[in-house]
Amino acid sequence: MTNQAQYHRIIVGIDGSKQADRAVQKAIAAARRNEATLYLVNVLNLGKLIGLGTAELGFGSVNQEALDDVKFRMERLVAKYRDQALEAGVTQVEMHVTYGNPKLELGKHLPKLFDADLIVLGATGVNMVERMVLGSTASYAVANAPCDVLIVRR
Image 1: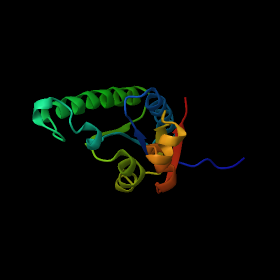
Image 2: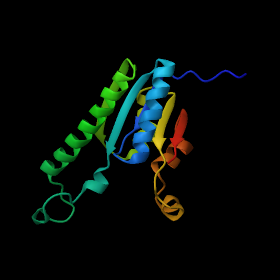
Image 3: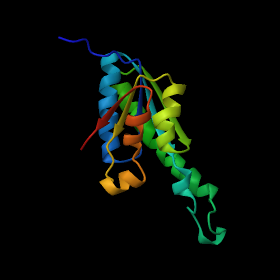
Image 4: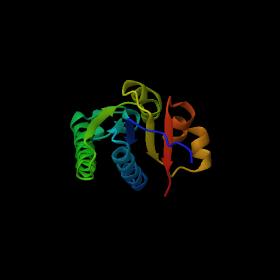
């Protein structure tokens, strides 16, 4: 029998998808089993949010009220997962909702910042061509993360 890795700091990426929900459930179980700190992370991609809001603001504009609404909804979702983790027995849970490039933040920056030893992400629904052109957050994390990455499939 081999030794299982002991994880102390686990990041899970949350984007509101069913795959992310499954990833959160796996991350909660791993955090409970390892008595680890769980970081619930949502990275709002400003590139995809530009132009959100009213048309009269012009091309490439960002409506701050609309951005605040999106961030508030994600904070509520992350808080729901925090409550689930605490109810499941995870004692150390941190929430982070921020702006940036999800691939870079989840695959490189946040794992270093939190000294994470595991990242848990849901597999995306993008097809192979989209993955080759754009690269999914999950595949980027697998290729670039400084720690273990667990990809949760459907």
